[in-house]
Image (cartoon, rainbow, N blue to C red; front, side):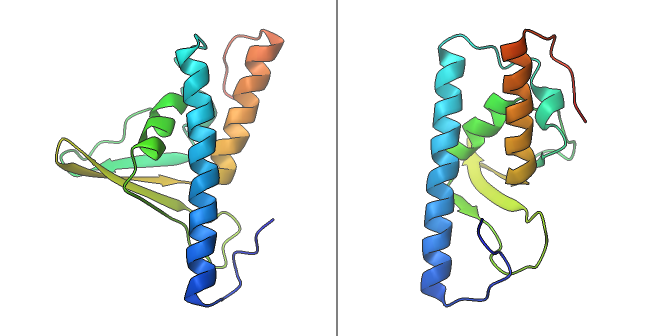
Length: 134
């Protein structure tokens, strides 16, 4: 586990963000590959809806999203930043990008997102109907 309260030099921060981004991107690519292989993403909203919110500059509403939607944002992100020293137990990661010239920011708790993914996979493996565990 990475200690997010440690105040280290800029090189440590850069290395941390690079490794964190690499692992997050690997997870997103692996999941999206599963979706393209036929695993349905529809119905995954309840598992991850509490883990993130998306801000798009052209609208003010917050809409439900699937695991695939989050993976798409991570894959197409222009930057991913996560606080290294804010002292919170669940730091929020900012994933930023643009879509057709419109900027967006995904604020995500990666811990809650990963927990939601595990619960979603468990529901698929057990054959249960998709239901929220929150």
